[in-house]
Amino acid sequence: MDLVFGSPLGRAAGLVALLAVTSLLWFVASRRSGTMRASAARADDPRLDLAGLGAVHGSRATFVQFSSEVCAPCRQVARVLTDLSTREDGVSHVEIDVGEHPDLVRTHGVLRTPTVFLLGPSGSVHGRTSGPMTPGQARDALAALDSDAPGTSELNSEPHGRTRGRG
Image 1 (cartoon, one colour):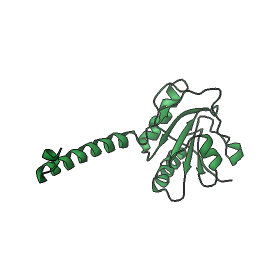
Image 2 (tube, rainbow, N blue to C red):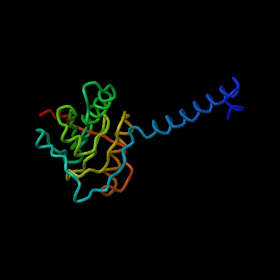
Image 3 (cartoon, one colour):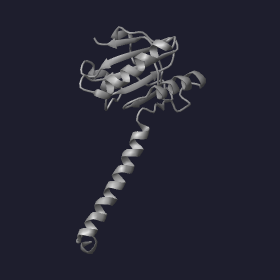
């Protein structure tokens, strides 16, 4: 090992290799950000009780966004979902502050913000995503929900009629 990393050229080559691997991992992780992964609904899945938050399910779809006050990407995702929600009938957007609802955070396994759940008309979870989301990803998620049977496709997300879920 000393022969390879003992020289300045060896250390530089090692640093370049480390940067290449780190860049590749970052690229792979960032490509998944905002992509909603489908979830097959199960009978024992916990339901997101929107009535307890003073919010209602959309007749077509509901985007439930878990956010925090100090989260810059949360504001971007809220803008995307709010904008799209004004353009799509029957779709609602509910934003939940993780600091005010730690019980929901634990129950639904939210590990970072923003995390967005896509609920179908019955309120069942069809997908979830974490991280920034583009308008295209939001439109794709809603289109996938509209065109596919519950929980059978890879989704990407979208909304209507934003309600802040603050208790």
